[in-house]
Image 1: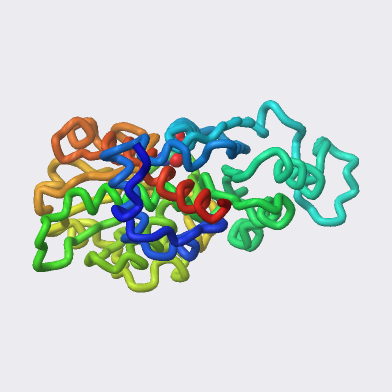
Image 2: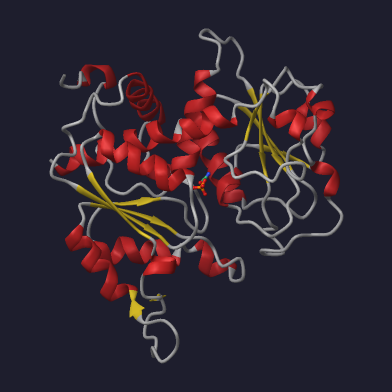
Amino acid sequence: MPYDYSLINNFILLKNFLSVSDAGNIDHLITTALNFKKNPLASQSLGKGKRLGLLFLNPSMRTRLSTQIAAQNLGMEVIVFNAGQDGWSLEFEEGAVMNGSRAEHVKDAAPILGKYFDILGVRTFPSLKNREEDYSEKILQQFVKYAGIPVVSLESATVHPLQSLTDIITISQHLPLKSKTKPKVVLTWAPHIKPLPQCVANSFSQWINGWDKTEFIIANPEGYDLDKGFTNGATVTNDQAYALKDADFVYVKNWSSYKDYGKILPGENNWMLTKEKLSVTNNAKVMHCLPVRRNIELSDEVLDSKNSIVTEEAGNRVWAAQAVFADILKGLQ
Ligand code: CP
């Protein structure tokens, strides 16, 4: 059955999908995704004859699998390449004398990927050592520059746009149909055993602010404020209990310090979200991008309770990716 495009108004014809700036109308993407959720194979000929390359420089389960399913639902052929372990180690320095362990320059590799594929997905993490370099998105931008085809971020040094679109889709599914007031969404920092990127928290902030349909509060310990370029528009507090009061959604995530870049600061182990802390919320739905460290970031009793919507959230990764690929494919026709 051909897809009823009237359901999704019109495509916005994405080129690259690297951050919220590329999303165009967020509500349009949500509607498209939710229509695919109802009817996954509605556009199964849209990607016929088109090939998606998924390049992973870092580990992944949800992104790897959901993007493959999404592309297959659209009739695309998909090839996954685990560059970090199966390929030649890539060099990203301009003018590098390549006498070390890195065997191939991105300037040589990316144009070849551009010949093999119609759309390229790339996952790369930050170094957490050089803030300027990470925040310039040096690695992802070189794939954009040299591949010559649409590039979709599968998580980069600073953001995770497919995750954030998923998160907003998930929130939108739990909103009252005729909400009179804006729902209160809290992003709360949580402890972790090792330094993690700021990507998910940056990206969630950027998308929630761009969507502009919630009262948005970020709670984190001193020293963990995110880059204001991502959080502008949100209230930022160091008081977790204050933030959680009457919350409708609580998004839990660890991130390392942006100010003291990539560091874990001492003495913040009482930030784990527990059932007791959740009791001051408006019976809030609890979200996390996963993978989650149980009883470090979030207690078992919260994760295993009805408040947790983390599995539904991860399931929605397919529909977010499918909405994005569908728009890009329409532009390629
Ligand atoms: N949330 C997320 O991106 O999960 P993966 O790292 O498993 O892809």
